Amino acid sequence: EAGVTQFPSHSVIEKGQTVTLRCDPISGHDNLYWYRRVMGKEIKFLLHFVKESKQDESGMPNNRFLAERTGGTYSTLKVQPAELEDSGVYFCASSQEAGRLWSEQYFGPGTRLTVT
Amino acid sequence: KNQVEQSPQSLIILEGKNCTLQCNYTVSPFSNLRWYKQDTGRGPVSLTIMTFSENTKSNGRYTATLDADTKQSSLHITASQLSDSASYICVVSQNSGGYQKVTFGTGTKLQVIP
Image (cartoon, rainbow over all chains, first blue to last red; front, side, top):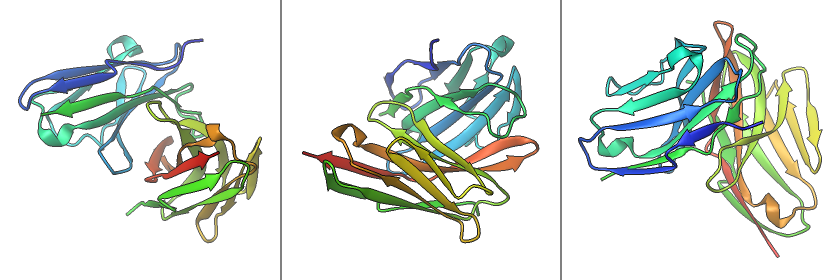
């Protein structure tokens, strides 16, 4: 069974440009999470989808970030326009059943975003 | 404010030796605590999960302890191997409207040398 995949693995863009990150969760997983690790800091929660609905987007830093999960399958995270402080590693994770507090979260390898 | 603090920040040990990593948290209400291993360039992988009623959990050479009263956890690695070199992250979950919301620690970077 394929794990969580993320694309691209690396992205280098200039300030002001747009970037779209993609996450393909494990097939059948209802929950999809986005996280971010900024250099030297801990991984922080961005948002949580249950199927196609946003359950919690309290971690989204500002309205330059837009996440979607069309049809409850893959998800995209768009940053527009990108700023220098958006640089970091963006992780996606998925877990199986909606509403289960102990569902194991499986992480993707992350997308390293560098804004210059 | 919900926080998870880990110590030490980094650690170098000789292959075959044991080590213990620490995690203190202030997350409330507490649901569960996980230890993750993150290899360079990869996403975190879960090692153990404990609820407030569990005070020890083992996974091979990894043993995690939890003291829910003092809000402390530790991860003990026995007979370390070169492949144990990685970052170890303590993650505490809380119940947020029936779903889990997680707070990550900054991690301990472990290097095992021959």
